[in-house]
Length: 95
Image (cartoon, rainbow, N blue to C red; front, side, top):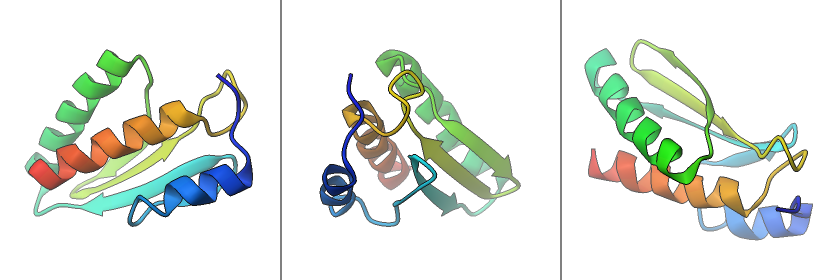
């Protein structure tokens, strides 16, 4: 899979609220009511990431989850990252 251009990344970011591009990755964060809710969402994301064979870099502190997506083999952002980002949004919205 080939790395996307900044123009392609910007066009795809227009379809995702709250995500930004920097340091060769797309990033977002979510705040939940409590740790249990954050961890529950992380678990659902983990199952989806495994199904897609594409795994996020993430960090959880109490009720906040920060996520970065990039395709290391391509050296930047690819369509795989946006596919997972949209799935993450669906999981969070359904939460």
